Length: 437
Length: 165
Ligand SMILES: Cc1cc2nc3c(=O)[nH]c(=O)nc-3n(C[C@H](O)[C@H](O)[C@H](O)COP(=O)(O)O)c2cc1C
Ligand code: SF4
Ligand code: FES
Image 1 (cartoon, chains in turn cyan, blue):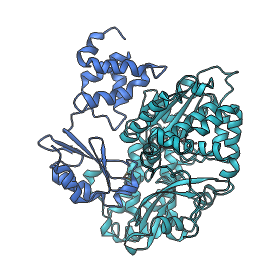
Image 2 (tube, rainbow over the protein chains, first blue to last red):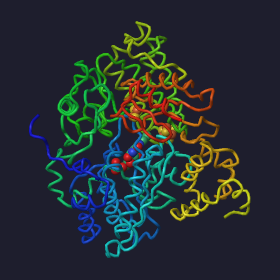
Image 3 (tube, each protein chain N blue to C red):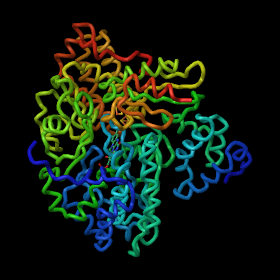
Image 4 (spheres, rainbow over the protein chains, first blue to last red):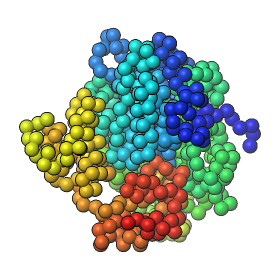
């Protein structure tokens, strides 16, 4: 390994009692909030803009710019909200959980600064229902922070008041999509809303709302403490800072690692994750969760940042690298993923509802030996009918993108699968059909 | 509260109602409390949401039962039919699949006597294949009654499920 890069995101998680307020304070906790409260809200927005921070929820939207879309409360006196996206359900992604469990005050401080900057008095943290421990940790941390005068009325005597509420989801992937999340928070089915109108104008209960991911907000106190210039010393020009990369699947040391944006994927695989397991070779990898285009091993030298992966026809997504070794069946992997999108499509758009179902069935029959050569073109034409921009939300794109990628990069395997009468790798045969129900 | 407080109080214990009264203060609209309320009902009232509970919740929120049903049935975590005393959710999404989720599911079924998606004949266990649980770097895993068990081997499955009362 070269000199290890500077870290900050995970520096506290190994500390004894890292989730406690006393430990957080001992390590400089809530200093950034104090600093923010001495600035004008617009200055805080400006600082986050200057840092170049981009959302860590998957789309990579510039955070400061998003905040600046919130209307001026002087001119628009409606209630306003921050919704914290802690739904974390993109397959491969498991980073927000660590921050919530092991450093909940870091998230709370980020929420408070974001609320101050946008002059928002109420935040909701929408946590996926299965995340019991992360939920409890953040809930308890809010209680402690409230007792210490850090949450609630007149925070640190500044005149700024902010309440943070916890809210539990109930197992639907689509509620991670920002407008699905808002519907769900209102107590409805998580059906995404057409955009426009955008959340900043018409969000929770029709009021101005910003939705941010947990890791995005977690970056904010560091920017306040150390400055935008410092932030830009890490990462790349257009993707500054460090990011939490979860690397899972066929590697020696699966884990969540903090790396500068722009780190080559090959380095993450070898230096952090210990390489492909059992001394095998890499066959394929998802760079940022199952919604990003599957790439062949030959592209493992790509840099993990927004521009590099986009140029390669994939996406940084949630930076959740899922690694498949040479024995894995790409067709079987696609069957699993399309079963997931089929199951999770909310059904509002026919292109998505039917497209995910068709893609799932085609990958299933390819992997079980009933595929036809025409199926390969059918995959492409179906995926073309589903995206881009043809549906209310991007779940349809999330199913279409990896499908296109597989046809592009793994056509040989698809064809071999048809000729051999099934997924060629016995080790990767499917679970029983029943189990997929 | 709505007109028929009697329906509510007959089904929902007073402590839960008190909790819900507090919960409502977090939101500008009553309906927002629905999903958190359903979670608490399922936890406290038998592991699934019985029709009368669903109606009582609707009543408390001044909603139609069919509206509450429409919401509850959208979310995989809510059971609208009885389940076993213990629920095992084995993740069968990609990262877990790549690290042997099939063997974990098969073992869980073997140990409990349940079929995937079903309940064991003795009513003790329901075993489900579930989607990504957000702990993919610790694959394979299952959730047993709300607690994650990670980096499992089939032997672990046998031991963990064997120790359940
Ligand atoms: C189908 C779908 C699922 C999503 N799931 C999540 C999720 O679980 N967590 C998350 O933070 N963002 C998720 N997103 C992205 C959100 O819509 C939104 O862009 C993000 O929360 C914005 O926060 P950020 O700007 O801080 O990244 C999802 C998007 C789509 C289309
Ligand atoms: S694209 Fe799919 S998930 Fe999104 S709104 Fe349409 S049907 Fe629902
Ligand atoms: S794929 Fe199993 S926890 Fe994410």
